[in-house]
Length: 93
Image 1 (cartoon, rainbow, N blue to C red):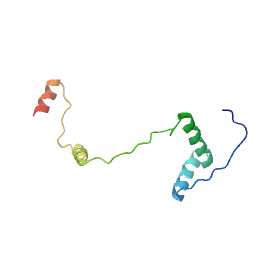
Image 2: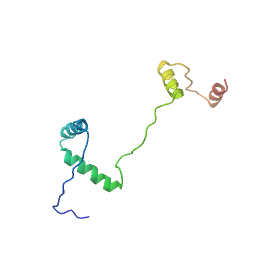
Image 3: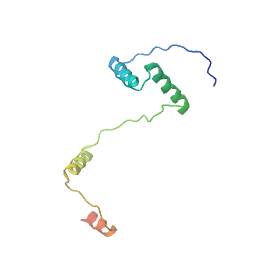
Image 4: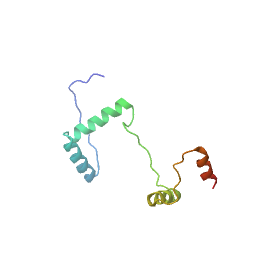
C-alpha cells in the first residue's frame, strides 16, 4: 500500500494519568504520543492484530502460593537428584 503525503485526524479518549505516563515514556524515547500511536497502528497492520500477546493472567491459587512461600523459605524442597532412582525414591516417600 503506497502512502502519499496524506493524513487524517483521530480523536480518542483515555485516562488523563495514562496519557501523562505514556507521554513521559515516549518523550524519554525521543518520540511524541502521535508517533507512538502510529507505530502501534502500523505494527498492528503488519501483524494483523495486536503486536504483542494479549492474555488474561489468573492469580495463583492457594496451593501455588503455599509452594512459592515454602520455596522462598527453603521448606519442603526436593532435589536436585543425581539419578532417576533417587528421584523415584523421593517421589515414593
